[in-house]
Amino acid sequence: MTYEIGKAEVPRMETGLADLGRFSDPSLLILASLAGGPKHGYAMIEDIETMASVRLGPGTLYGALARLEQRGLIEPLPAEERRRPYRLTGVGVVALREQLTSLESFATTGLRRLAASWG
Amino acid sequence: MHQLLHLYPQKWRTRYGDEMAALLEACPFTPFVLLDVLLGALDAHLHPDILPEGVFGMTKRIRSAEIAIFCGFVIFGVAFLVLLRLPDPLASWDPAAAAHPELNVLYRTAQWAGYAGLLALLAGGTPLVLVALKRAYQTRQREVLRPLAVATGISVVYVAYSVVVFVVVSSRPGTGVRPLRPMDEWLSLIWLLFSCVGLVVGTICVSLAVARGDVGASLIRLALIPAAITTLCIAVSLGATATLTTLIVNEAPGLMDSQDSGGVFLVAIVGFMGIALAIALAGLVRGLRAQGATRGAAA
Image (cartoon, rainbow over all chains, first blue to last red; front, top):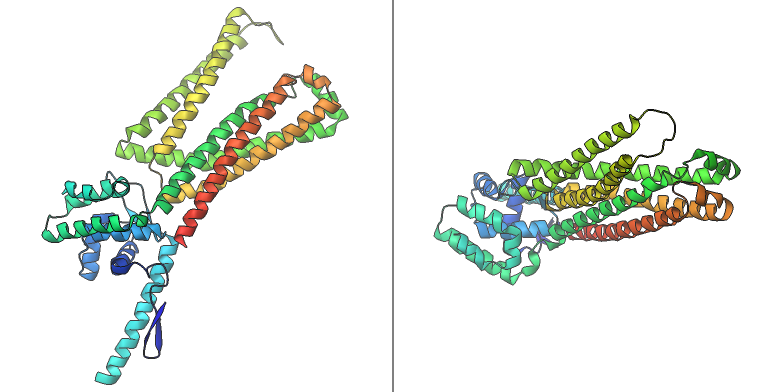
């Protein structure tokens, strides 16, 4: 699935996050958080808040985690007491890289147009 | 806050209940958290298909498949140990093997396939057991530590008893084959009973520990490769043993009566190996299907 910004076609969620609805953004945040290493739920919430100034609620976090796990983008590690860390899978790394690359391209295009039109 | 988790479906609580409860304990209770959990519970009811059955459940299936292959190999191992006695006594085996060199080729094939299967099993199974043990020790997982302790205890007592029997029997004066004394026969009978009971209990204990252990999904999936090799080795060994048995019946029937594991033993060996292969194959098919489903879910 793609959408257009003028002549630039930006791929949107081609790698497994496309149909996540309201969980698309939390999923991307979780993947980005796990890019720094395996984390359990609370550590992810704290990390995402530091990284993106967004605080995910427990329901949203686990809704997104379940979807990511179902798609094989993340996998659970052995539990530490009751807290279970998660980590990116190989597919998850590819998905995150594609997402971030398309976002980077989108941001570059937007900034270039902004600079050209508005100085 | 814990009570909120009861709003989630049972399957969801089984999978995420513990870790989500731990998270709720760490989070300060606010109206935002309450609303978020309520919406999460609603979402879980509306989308029951989002539960990662495809990956989490499939990993459990792969693990049970590997345990089945392990049990299959244990049965194969019993038959294999009897098969190793086939050339004994050499006095009648060597002339037959000289007249029919294919006997030796088939016997060696069955033998080395068995050893290769054992190596593959150890390569795949040892990391699973060690990781389960390490995690169980760190988290005081008694349901894993107990069966492993029982298996270790049985092994230690078995080895100690075997050494005692060996020392007692071999310390008698004289050389060559000596008639067994009544005490030797009792010691040997107890040793045989101990072997059977120890094998069954040990197999169950190790299987339970691996089934209950906290082992990563990657390691479980990876262990399916040596498990497949083990199954292949059982098949090769069975093929060689069955051909060997047919050859002995047709070309060297004298071995049926003269050898330690001749006659009815050879048929029993083939039968046991067949059962072992059936169990291992069933496990392998189940494991490969689950592996495929896991990849499908990841694709």
